[in-house]
Image (cartoon, rainbow over all chains, first blue to last red; front, side, top):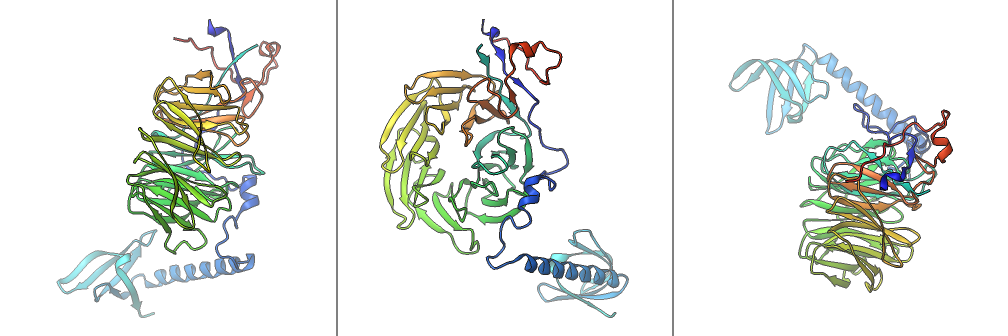
Length: 129
Length: 329
């Protein structure tokens, strides 16, 4: 019957997705050739302007992280939305800076021994160095 | 000696594959993007089906996906009411364009500077990707959800197919409908071939070919089953179609004769497209897979290897995988 036809041979099967990666291998020839300026961010941006921006961003990020370290254990004033202003002792931030762990949070309802503040609710923090 | 087609199955998606698109031919080959109800569109090397990356970010089923010609940008349309633009080299999300309802279709202009979107809110939108914060231009008129929207005629006009059973041709500048086609059934798919200005439409069991400028009918062909998608070969010698009966059909475009039909998918076929070089076509199915099919069965191309009878029995054959002979029911 039709089983007489020989099926076309293949070298291998197509590669499937990697389990723990979203792919886009940065060592692929296409990636190396086309990045980092695959999509121009603004028409007048040149290579060195991008590098400068990157350097400034790295510097600002480092300053922010060092500020968090310096804040540890200190009494900090948090200015939040809806004109809320509270004082607390700063403990730590989580890895994505989504929550701030504090103790002895002074609130109109009393002092909370332990609390988490949502970072997105915080407008500013100030403390004595 | 006649050979039997060996489709290449691309796995990875976990839900039905509802749309797929090829890029143009780039110095790195050509690429394929697939839209899936699992919300994770994937980029693959076009001639092998090898997975390159997954675009992560959508929070709902992805209904439409497209690549620009150079395969440097991708765009996706999703049930989370957004269309997204991606860097197709790094996989990073570049833009999120909020809509008021499910987005079904996305299409870049030839220069990749504008993105056309269409979806369930019945409005066509044109985004200037150089000014993404600016409000898009809107074209209203359809009375039901838009299924597919495509640039045509050198990006001066727009073709849109909607659940209101019409296909409309719009002028991009005046935003007026220049021409319109009405059908008795909902149009299931639309493909535009710039070279030759041909429009391929499917509805019910019919595959219809129209002149894109005039919307004059060229010819229609009826298939044995309800067809969800069809694609015309770049040389316009054949076309392929797939739908409800899980099979891929290959027809001679000139004579309208059915040449071949292929089984393989385990569910209805939602989308089928020829590669830009015409050497293969890809199909996406309800079964969650993409399959690549050879146009010239037996030819050495991509992962397919032409093996002469003597080589098959040779011990030194470099062929690693030979599919077992299937028993036809």
